[in-house]
Image 1 (cartoon, rainbow, N blue to C red):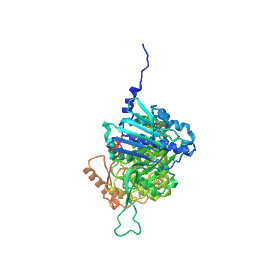
Image 2 (image 1 turned 120 degrees about the vertical axis):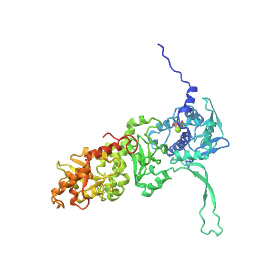
Image 3 (image 1 turned 90 degrees about the vertical axis):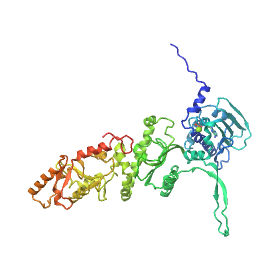
Image 4 (image 1 turned 180 degrees about the horizontal axis):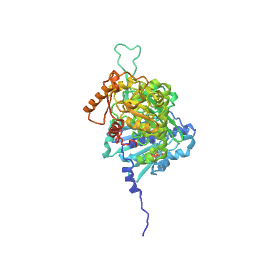
Length: 569
Ligand code: ADP
Ligand code: MG
């Protein structure tokens, strides 16, 4: 047997990094703008603690496309690098200057918002560029440096005559990546990844019309000026304190997030926690109407204000993926597989935290303004009912605010409903029978019949309601649900005052035999009590369990979101 050491040389690794480091080539821009942002935030921090004796000012980052020269420039006014630092931070692949910085300034810099941490971001430039230049001048009083590399492990490093502080990265775009020289492509990427980054980002200029002066003459021609086109909002709502935000601010931010969405959200939940993990964000409950399957405005995941993904599966509990908004957390491990994410303890905690916050918010909406909450119920019930079925923790809390509407527009919690019906709707075995309709038109006469007898009839029409009913029955002793057209209603204990029948017992018996002759299907039973009210001549009912089995086989399996994850019943 022989053993040995596999020889990995830089020459072999480098092309691999280039090709496979990130599956998505477009993220090079996110990485380089993140580095520019880090450089700016580091300088801010050093100036704050007095270590850098510089005028911090109002630094911006500029992205420029030179289509003819086939170049993209990313220019910052951050802390820059000395030649020695270029050697250290750039030439060492997978050495993160960001991590080193955070380590060095541990306590004071922990909230500085610094993004980088793998020490690989810079090299993503080579996914789209055949040659990369760095021209950089440190805030320290040292000569500027000029680094050039064509993607091979060889580089050149020479002095530069740059005089202003900061770094310019020049990408010489490769032939297979010329799409990135299109202005529209770059502005699309900036919109996607950098829209809420903390340092202003300039991309070209735009024309602004000056306000018309008061003493303007009749033939006044509007005056325009060219201003920097800043593509981002460096202080998005979720980074602020809830107490500093009004309802209007939350609505405005919703529009900022989803410019093409015209429907207003129903309410929002501001997330803000820093122990045992860091997480901020704002979630919005949209109106849940129409097509649930089609959802393009999803929850967006950010890390220190850099967009990461809108696939939050595993981070947000499944039932809440229907919500909208943002989550920002530096503690969510990125660039890892989804299955790993789901197993990660920190991520599980985040998911639980979000569930709890949502439940708490719903409870406070319910207690603070019940009427308003009742009005919103129909627009949110699907999500909440699904949550009750799929998240035990949510189910526990939802007892306090989950509502069961009646056909005549009243809303009860389950406890209220039990209280309300316990005298009137029990059967011979002492079970409380909750009657419900699933369609007020089709079941109209049954509803009228039950109401005539003084029973409460709920209107439960969600696609997954039969699953929820099963769960409620399993968890509440002596509680049964029965649809108004089910035979249960026959078994309810009659109230004292019997109505005077229009038919004699003999006549009734005769009619029943006749009807049974017509309805040959023995699944149905005939009920003549209705003859005594005005609503219907007679009623045909079906055993509840038969109907329910049929219904469950229709809604089971795929689940209502088509996610195939309906809990086992
Ligand atoms: P990370 O950002 O994870 O630390 P990168 O590969 O993105 O790793 O960058 C490596 C290092 O290069 C950074 O940590 C930083 O020290 C340095 N660097 C990259 N870009 C800049 C820049 N624009 N200004 C100053 N330093 C930079
Ligand atoms: Mg980086």
